[in-house]
Image (cartoon, helix red, strand yellow):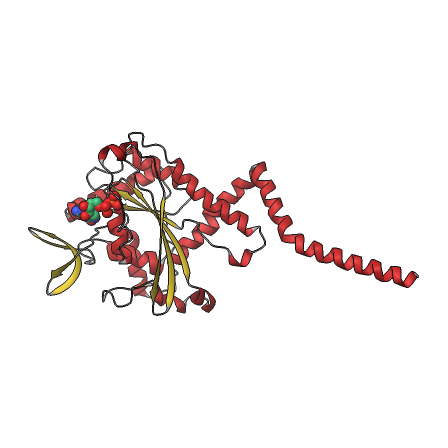
Length: 338
Ligand code: GDP
């Protein structure tokens, strides 16, 4: 178990959540499943390690070019328990390595299948006997890494996001933002936002801010919405900057600080993921994406019979009890008659 609390000063984590949520879920801890997708080499694992301050990918084997090309999309799951001020978060990272390496890029099936399988499992558990202790493995969010080198979205980015947007909350990111000047970042963000609209891609929409929120909160919310798609930088090393040890990248011409808000949107992304919007991401997963899945599943006979079977499991104990009562009554009547 990794304790996050002694880490960076600016770290704001999920331990602030107890005020907002039920004490029981605090005791039990939170579950959150995050998927990362995008071309390999885009800095996915570095960013995940930077976000959660842990080296999840220590044992990863790097593939050579030949292996990468023949590699099919393979899903790998890492789980990490994070604890802060006694509040637990069970974080599952679903990595989709190899995506973008194969020549034929339009095969997202293993990824969409994975998301559907988690829905299917939840659907079955929900209709089963042990409904109180369901393990929620549904994917709550997918961070999609867009390369910083192009002039906007590539056809492959459009196709990928469209294949997933009805199933999961997509948060697009501009990867390796240190390759771009602030002006270039602004241009690329504008372009990506335009293209997301033009191609009808449904990325995660931040909820509207309540009108009775204080001005500072409203301002933060506005800034958060305006800075999408988040431009991120990751690093696994700690460097010295302005007399402090910070997570950053050391170049011959200077230092790029991961947690410096004038260098990139890393802090905004982390805060929204594990602080301000974690619950909304889970709610949208449940109320929109899972409901979509359920309504589609009901249309298919196979899944329907699945559900009926699940219901039978649920009512079976009651039926058994009723049968026992009937037997007893029958016996009593029989005894009376004699
Ligand atoms: P993945 O295959 O998408 O998981 O990519 P990795 O995290 O393994 O990163 C691939 C390479 O890019 C490594 O050499 C990293 O050090 C480097 N890298 C990761 N993040 C960044 C970043 O934000 N900026 C730059 N310039 N390089 C990065």
